[in-house]
Amino acid sequence: MFCSFCSFPPASRRGFLALTAAGVAAGLLASPADSLAASAGAPTSLTADQALAKLIAGNDKYVKAPDVCANNLLKQRVEVAKHQAPWATIVSCADSRVAPELLFGGAGVGELFVTRNAGNMVDTATMGSIEYGSAVLGVPLIVVLGHERCGAVAAAVDMVQKQAKFPGSIGPMVSAIVPAVQAVTGKSGDMVENAVRESANRTAQQIASSSPLIADLIKKGKVKVVAARYDLDDGKVEFFA
Ligand SMILES: [Zn+2]
Image 1: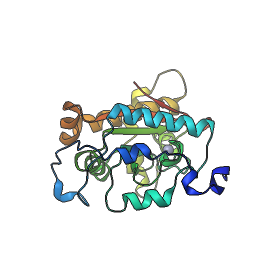
Image 2 (image 1 turned 135 degrees about the vertical axis):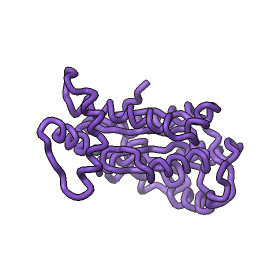
Image 3 (image 1 turned 180 degrees about the horizontal axis):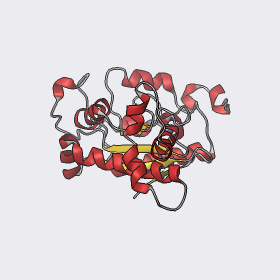
Image 4 (image 1 turned 60 degrees about the vertical axis):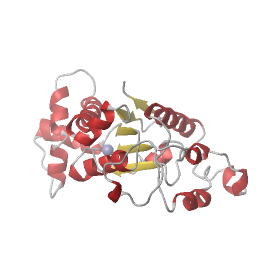
């Protein structure tokens, strides 16, 4: 994935991180856990809706003109070395084809707060990471990103339809997706596809309702949680609702 931008001097590269640089202008949250923060500094100034618009624009860029070197990563790395102010948390699948920084248009370091596991589910570690992102770092937008033909969801479908069993910790991990599969059983259309959407929606709802920290931030209008689905074929991210 080489592109013409890679041969340009850093100063000529597009100002994709301008919003990030401007994003340190205002404090967003009175952190309930200041002692957890790696260093003092303002969170992003982007609202959840602005963050969502930026993800949509980034994905559009990825679909229409993908490249991996639009950012000046050296400059960005130096800027965020002492303080991070990410503007979106992405809960995505561990699937090697669903890399958030890439499919959202080449986000650089310090932009996305990412937690990944097969099936993009939320366990204690993931929930704690999400809470840290929003309650401590001030991330305004949380995205649960399912994807087309997810292997973990397909495994959960096999569990339901064929009583499939999986070794080690894979079984319990996949079992967590089974309720979503059961919820779409009998619906028309592709079972895995239906379950991908159902599971992402359920996980978004779980984050919004089962975490007191996140629920409080939502109530204050400081955080939004949305589910989405990435299309492996055309690269597009569809945000639900
Ligand atoms: Zn997957």
